[in-house]
Image (cartoon, rainbow, N blue to C red; front, side):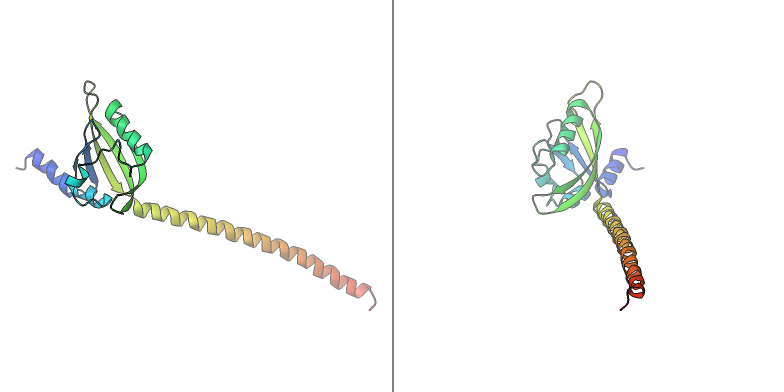
Length: 166
């Protein structure tokens, strides 16, 4: 029978989600292979050098969420565009899960990441399509109004042609 710890280690190593453990001082303690791939890191040892409280490539709201998770035990869900120091850009959804009981603050945090780049691209295409539809409706309405004006001008012109001797 597989030991629970071995089973959890296998899930951690082979997950389609990125997983990171952050210490109560903000230091990255561990990162699974999927997360390293998502953020374009060359390896776990390089990633462990960083502190999420001061990492300049993280948005300030993400750094704040990590601080609140550690200091207050406050979980959170965020979406961010991450630009690594190695030139990789990813759209990430993350869930921060504090690991603490009521007696241990500050606490460690497990951060679970999913790459939502394809979802973001689909949302952008959907918004562009909506803008194009709005523009086409506006154009159709404008041409219809112009057609009505020109119809009146042509109609009165032909009436005038019959009334005025020529």
